Image 1 (cartoon, rainbow, N blue to C red):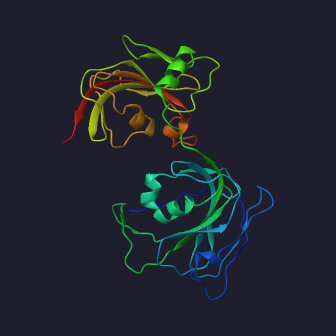
Image 2 (spheres, rainbow, N blue to C red):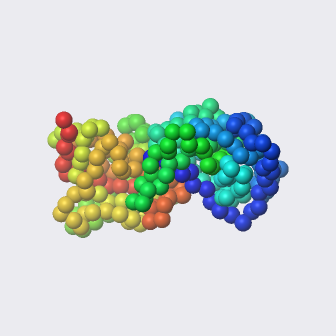
Length: 310
């Protein structure tokens, strides 16, 4: 199944020329970037655009930093009908949209993923995909053989941020000794997490093991039952937790939770108690979905039970 690349609708009008006998090559898409950020580019191609494969082509080269696997790029984009070149959605002049260049993108949009790994900030990319057919139950059926792309997406890479990484034990110890990591007090009710004043969140994932357990250690094939309490680094306010419940939260170490959990709880033993200081890109990002917290987060986690699948 494929997911559609989201683009935002704005009130801006994009000049588009679509005429002629048509084309089969994305390299023929012409993009003329505007002189300022408040003006949309001029995009033109001969319609109809006839392609029966997923394809991504760099049509304008930038001169910024190279894009690497694991980076999160900020994009601006426009969505066009291949049949007549009609612009349907665009956010060329609006806020950028974050896009992780990760395994999920590689699975959903492999051609775009491979092109991005050869791209730079400032590049413009033309991307066409063959969409499946939406079923009555909401699922998408894979496209029939010979189906042609109905959408062309023109993407500008506006910026890129390298993926955060776990800090070493020595780095975590140094931050802790300097009073630059959160602390926690436990007892009845919710744990009380204190964020150090006038301190920026660590640039990487800080795993502060407060108490090491003695049970089996987590691995990629493990599942775990945990109690947890989460607050925002910005103001220390709680946004989630389950210490009021006798039952733990069931999670799989193979996925389904934020990257900061998967990396932060990796290799910890059953019975361990840990504080995780998680950068935004390993949590929900800087533009999260409604109901999700923004920015760097802090979790206190107790690993109640670790089960390893055979």
